[in-house]
Amino acid sequence: MNPIPAAKIVIPEEDRKAILARIDESLKTGALTLGKNGKEFEADFAKLVGTKHAVAVNSGTSSIEIPLRVLGVAGKEVVVPTNTFFATAAGVVHAGGVPRFADIDARTLALTLESVKKAVTPKTAGVVMVHIAGLVSPETPKIAEFCKAKGLFFFEDAAHAHGSSLNGRMAGTFGAAASFSFYPTKVITSAEGGMIVTDSDDIAAQALQYRDQGKEGFLTNFHVRMGYNWRMSELHAAVGVFQLKRLAEFMRERNRVASEYQRRLKGLEGLTLLTPPAGSVCNYYKVVALLDRGLDRASVKKELKERFAVSLSGEVYDTPLHKQPVFQEYARGKFPVADDVCARHVCLPVFPGMSDEQVAQVVTGLEQVLAARKVAS
Ligand SMILES: Cc1ncc(COP(=O)(O)O)c(C=O)c1O
Image (cartoon, rainbow, N blue to C red; front, side, top):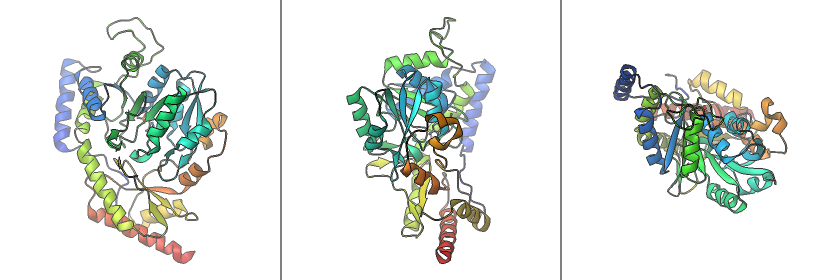
C-alpha cells in the first residue's frame, strides 16, 4: 500500500523552469522586491477576483491586518467566527481592535446572519467572514447587506477561497476588501505571501503605503502611516504568478476528487461529507466530513494511518479561538455549534493529480475503520 499524503504541493516542471528563469532575471538585475513580478501577480489576481485593485504582501496575516487598519478597528469590536485560524483574530488585535467571537452554521462552517446579529454591540466596527475550506456560504451576501444597513464594514478572510464563488460572485467581492493567503498548503502558493483585494481606490492607496513602512510613496523617505515591512519579494511573486495560472486546473482536479468522494462515500454510516450549497463553486481547499458524535477522531485518524497508510490533514480548526489560551481575554459567550463541529470533523486527502485508486484507498480505509467502530458500539 502506497502512503496517501494529506496534501501535496504541485509546481509542475515547466512552471519550475519558468519560475527559475524569472528568479534568475531578478538576481541578475537586482530587481528583488516591488518589481514587475509583483505587479504582474497583482494584475492577474485582480483580474481573477474581478476587483479594481490587488495589493501583494508578505503573508495572508498581513493581508488581514493592513485593511483592518485602514478600515479603522482601533478600540472597536470586530465580529469573527470562532472556528477560524489564529491569524483572523490576531489581525484584528494587531490592528488595535477587539475580536468578538460568533458561532456558525454546521452546514457551511461559516457565520450566519443570526449569529452575527447576536455578536454585534454598539462598539462593533465590522464583521470578518471566513470562507472555511473554500466554501462560500449563502449567508455571505445577507451579512454584507446587514453590515451596509448598520454602517459596519464587511471584510472577507478568503485565505481558503481562491477562485471560489457564490451565484457567480467571486469570494473577495462581497465587502469593502478581502484577504488571501499563499501559504504552501493553500490551493495556490507563493511560498509565503498574501493579497489584499478591493474596489476602493482609497483602501488600495493606503494599503500600498502600509506595506512599505507607511511611506508616502515608494521613492520617498516620508512616513505618513504606522506601516511595517509587509512587502512581497520578487522571488515569491514569481512563484505566485505561475501558480495562479494553474488555479483553474487545480480547482477542476480538486472538484473531481471531491465528486469521487461524494459518490463513493454516499450512505456510509458514521461520516457525512460537507456539500457546498447550490450556486456555490468551491475550490475544495479542504474536503470536510463530519464524524458521527461518539466517534473518537484521534483514534480514527491513527487507524487510517497505521492500517491503510492514509494521512488526514490538520482540521479547520480543531480548537476554536475562544478556547485558545492567547484569546482568553476575548472569550465571552457560548458557541455550541462551533464546539461540536471543531471536535468532530476531519479533512480528507485532496490534491491535484490524486488518482481514483488513491481515492479508493481512502474510501476503503474509512469504510473499514468506521465499520469496526459500529460493530464495537
Ligand atoms: C483562515 C486563515 N486566515 C489567515 C491565514 C494566514 O495566512 P498566512 O499563513 O499566509 O499568514 C490563514 C492561513 O494560514 C488562514 O487559514
